[in-house]
Length: 165
Ligand SMILES: [Zn+2]
Image (cartoon, rainbow, N blue to C red; front, side, top):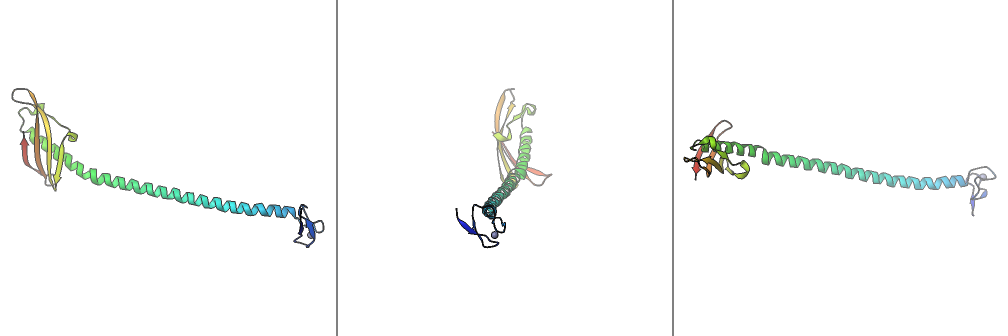
């Protein structure tokens, strides 16, 4: 227990007293509410700072996520978009070029694009694949082929070579 000076009338009052007995100025109450209020303010500030930094992190996370998605989409469209459609066009053209040279084209079963190798230099595509088709004796045999096709434009193309084993 200690004596404090009443801020109102400077009378010495016990700090356990609720108010100054002389002027009625609230003593303990004032000190009690003042201290927690201050620490509460500090706590609030800390909480606010935590909240803001957490908010910043979330925001950063969202931004990084969006950038990642954009990069992935860009990679997909540049790597697999136009390139793969040209690849499949070359692949289909190569197949039809080979089909023309088969004895029994109706029996032809071409390998899928996955089982084929398609390389390109500029507009020239080299398709290495195989076809299962009946030969002159009606036996189904696998024939490997390499076709080079030049995609001149969207409408026109040129078969440069058809090599059938
Ligand atoms: Zn007083």
